[in-house]
Image (cartoon, rainbow, N blue to C red; front, side):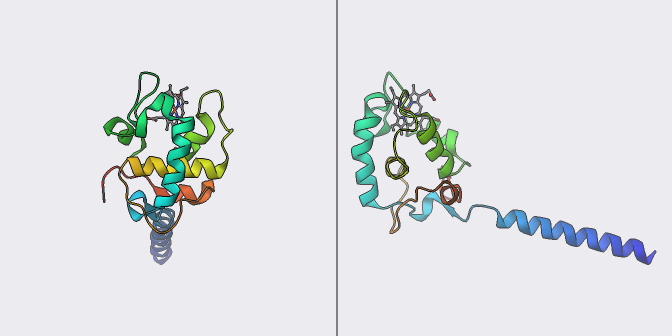
Length: 144
Ligand code: HEC
């Protein structure tokens, strides 16, 4: 009898530990926390106009060649993902035919500009260009 209680107790403990670990793994920051700077978004805007705007339109408004990078459909695609997912999408698939040719810093700057045109607030620290750090920033379409 005693043993069974002990077993049940240790199972409960294990469950609590697993829950704590999974909570801990949740991204700590979100796009609402000011995760890029204005200066970075300005650099990103120049790159965007050169590399992306001819298809995606001015400020991501969309064009006949490519979907909008702002607005409800775009928000729905990234809501609940991370900025790392958006960064990877830019880095590995865009611009078509030149995939992977923009550097990490350039992609971070373009991604910062995308956060700006999607009306997320700027802050004091630049958006990093390392995948691991970017995966820690959640993309939430609506302010939590
Ligand atoms: C030659 C035209 C063209 C250029 C230049 C281009 N794109 Fe795209 N982009 C597309 C097309 C077409 C799609 C939709 C098909 C697809 O997903 O591949 C797309 C899709 C995307 C998506 C996915 C949108 C979503 O709702 O999931 C992102 C993000 C994106 N582009 C970012 C960029 C960025 C950033 C640049 C510049 C570095 C860029 N694109 C340059 C044509 C282009």
